Image (cartoon, rainbow, N blue to C red):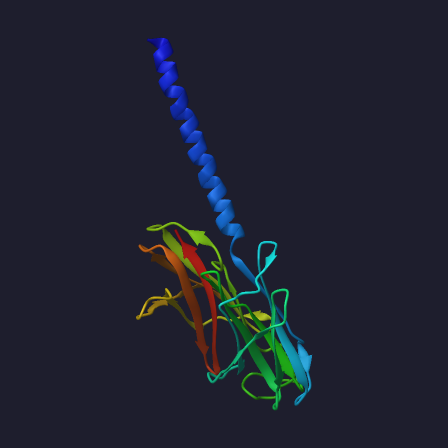
Length: 244
């Protein structure tokens, strides 16, 4: 009887270990399989100067040469109107455009990349002309506002979560080199096949740190646009995460 029991238990233990190893391997694989996008652009240029803006798209060690779409969104900081320009693949996973900025100011460049059923949207800032011009057009040369544009640190970007687990969406918002307090921050969340987007009001936990809790009952990739408004500041940034 003891031998028979040992015979039954041992395969069960081996099966449990195998399942555990497979689960861990799948989790590691999924994290490694997220696409990465690296924007290459000058940070300071002159008005009417022709520049190349590029994005290198990769997945692990592989360069992605067959991306479904690479679009560069360009807009002046503090404004809603944006120009969308499709990138051209130049080989080795590098997609680029050429752009001439006709007016001075701070410009936000977002690379919208869709590849292998995933989406990534990193952003960079280009200062055109006199760096003392703020996003509102006011001269800031008498103050240390040469970097007076809005930046985000979205803590959930490209993370993987479980269905029905409560997730804390969190972001740190900075204006220039200081954390922005007292702003209205909203998380806009949707999946690619959703016709309706959900808007989640964030709460400021402490200076410049905003968060909101949400439980997702549907698996898949989620897009998140963070909207920030305060006085003349009206900025947004898009990212994504995955629920399994």
